[in-house]
Length: 150
Image 1 (tube, one colour):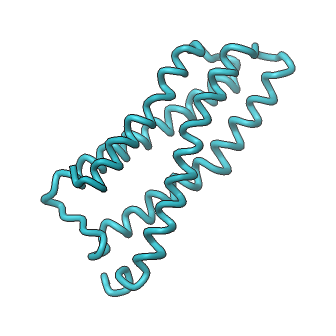
Image 2 (cartoon, rainbow, N blue to C red):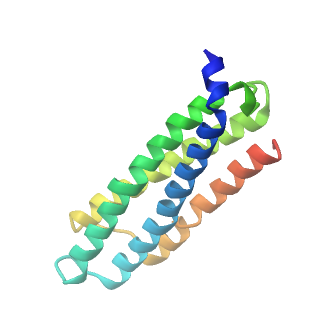
Image 3 (cartoon, rainbow, N blue to C red):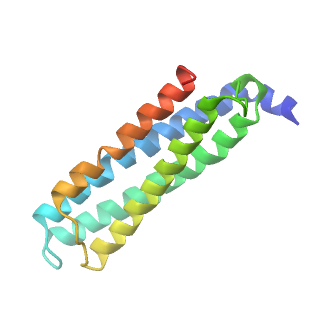
């Protein structure tokens, strides 16, 4: 089974990197949109529906597909001999934990979009600014885990 994974390894790795970049871009941008939404719009005003459309399209058309591709291709890489993943190494587990946390954060952002959609946002722009740092911290853990084998 791993023979075909070895053959497509450069393509799999390339697709994984591209999907991660797209996913991370969305994870950085969506909380920033929420900052503007929380601070500059009120339910029913002219800016509210514009931000809702931007948030919805970012989540549905960019973030969700890129997250799915990241996961599918990442799991393929996990079972590819050239990727060098060994279940006994700590870096595999630290990366896995950080990716699961990133996925949780993605879904948390999706729930906040529904809050805005229902006119029920309870978080401040400051809170969204703080939450905007979560993907950066997780990215640091993931990159160090994979590159330094930390």
